[in-house]
Length: 412
Image 1 (tube, rainbow, N blue to C red):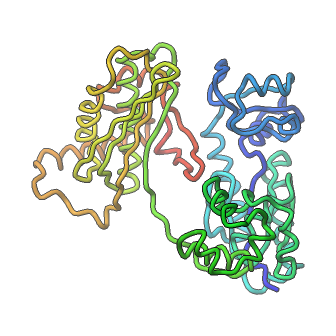
Image 2: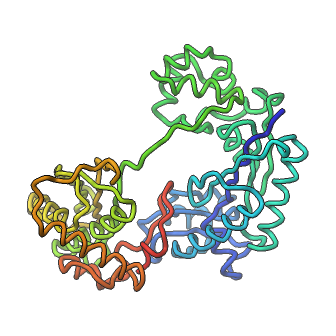
Image 3: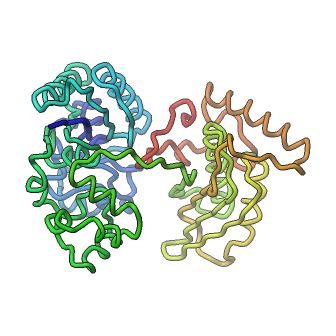
């Protein structure tokens, strides 16, 4: 028996932080939303009191209000969530080395050999829970999973919520997980679920019984072998991944729902994406614009370029794409910008035909980045974003599923 991994999953994290910071919300159903007063938006988090009524992440505000008439909506405070996350991570790190932070509410660590026995592993998990309750407060709770590999530890952390502690050891497999749905397992989305069902696998029990070669055939790659091994508690090295996109999207406030406002907002988001790109020391070779006109028409345009992290170059490309937008369409309501075909600076080959001015502009932009990190992201910017820069509600900090923004980089 060897419980090598301890996985921590924080319960309803955004809503729990709001309840910790605002006593009036404690014990009440809470829905966290991007903006107050907008009934067309959705909840990005819900407290357990709200979940008891069927409200969950993605529930539209109108539906949430119908399900729970007493629900309290609060506007998301992303900087506060990042600050609390940083405090939590630092406190846990004092007890257990945090190998990786997977998202704002998920992290894991590997237990040293002398603490992998079930009683020692449980004691370590309980000490983490006690430390969080003492130092962070009782309103931000975590569910912890213990298992021989990371896959099962993550699964265990979701089996008992809230404030759970679940062990999955070799002797617990597979009977302790056969009551779960296939969709509960990491790596099984809608597409993979269809493929499994097409091959006669309709339950976790059937998945565990399937031979290795069948899972390899279903997945069409070595990932099927990895799933077969993961279900048996075998500890395989993680697959290295690289960032594929950098981007932002935003629902336009009423005053910017016009061509000028949408164009300025796209530049605002592109300049934020450029700051992130340079902070990561990455270069982008593709730019994609996405615009929703009215409530029906969705338009997308893209172009490729020599990999760059220069805002001037990217801004010119944005203007070229914007000129091709559909004319006579309803007013824009939602805009997005994405940078793709990313490559790390260490593997980037400079453009042999670049103008000397391009290098000077990049040095200028890095100097601007330093000023914006110190004084806020609206301190220095290019004029095409002016109309959007005036509005604090335009492209504020957002926490993506697997990206925790740096406060210095994102703060306005």
